[in-house]
Length: 428
Image 1 (cartoon, helix red, strand yellow):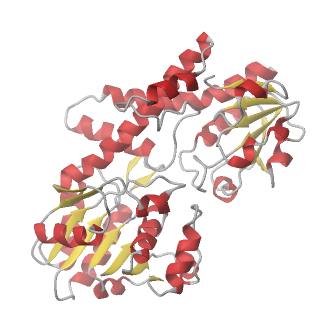
Image 2: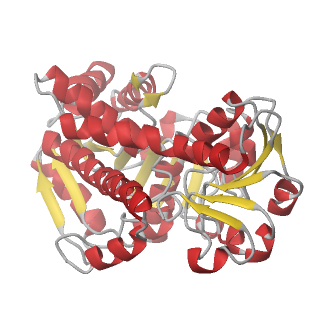
C-alpha cells in the first residue's frame, strides 16, 4: 500500500519505518524542514535505538521519503496521524497540532477522488476522534466520514528506547473503526503479524490505550510504594518483586522500584484520564494516587543526598542520566528534571551528564546546570553522585570509587557497592 504519516516524532517515525520495512511505500509529512531534510538523507531527527539504521535502509531502498507538502497525501491510500496532543504549558490536552493535521489532510481529500482512510495513532481521550477529529476532517474535506473517507483509531503501544522493536513485534493490534471498510483496510496492513488483532469501536480503542498506560503506571507506583516500605524495614524490594513476578497474574515487568516514571505518555495520559473521568462525574482516586506517588518519588533522591552529605548549600552534585529512560533522548517529564530542580532549590551546584539527551535537557533546564562531556567528568570532585537513568555506562563500578552514591535505578549491586563507595539505594 501507499501510506502517508503526519508527524515524525517518536511515534510517527517509528511507525513509518515499520511500515516501510514491510514493503509499503511511505511518505513522512512534517512541517519542520530540518526533519524532512534529515530523513531524506537517511538520518533520524531523534535518537531511538536502531532507528537511524532503519531510516537509512528504508530511504536507501526507496520505500521511505519525507515531504513538507500535504499534497503528497493524495497519492496514498491510508494516512496515519501521529502528531502530539499535549503541551506542558497548557497542563492538558492541546488539539492545535491534531486539528492542523486533520485540516491539512481534509483539504487534500476535498480534491481527491476515491476512498481514503485516516488512522489516528495520536493518543487522545475517549470521544476525541468523534467529537474533534472527524468534524474537522468533514469540514475541511466537504465529505462525510464513512462515505467520502474512512476513519479508524489505531493506538500505538511503543516503549521509547525500544520503539523499533515494538513496531516490528507488537503484542496486539487495536483497530477502532468508524466504518467496516476502513477497519478492513487497516487490518490488511497487519495480517502478516502473528498477534491478536482486535476490531472494536473508536471510543473503546481510545480507552484501551489509556487503560493500558494507566495499568503500567500503577505497577510502577505500586512497587515504588512497596520499595519505600521495604527500605524502612531493611528488606530488598528486588527480592520481593522477583518472587512476585513468578505469578503469571502479576508478571515481573514494570516492577523495578526506583525514581518513578516519566516521558511523554504515562504522566500526561493518566492526568487526561483523571480529567475525563471528572467530566463524566467520577472521581478517579486510584489514578490520582498513582500520580501523587510518582510526583513524590524523585524528590526522595535529593532528600537522600541531603541526608548523606548534610546541607547541600554550596555542595556539588553529579546527576547521571537525563532522559526518562535508557535508549532514548526524550526528557519530557523525566524524573531527572524534578531531581535537579529539587537540588537547585536546596542550593546545590549541579553537574549533569547523559550519553544522548544533553541537547534536549539543555533546552528545559536552568542555565546554572553544568553539562559534562562524560560521566567521569561529572563525577570528578562531586560531593555526591545521583544516578537517575540506568544507562549501561553507569554500571561501571570504578566510576564511583570513594564517592557518596544515591542510586535511583539499581545500576550497582547493593551487595558489592558498599565495598568501594558510600552507597544508598532509593528503595533498597
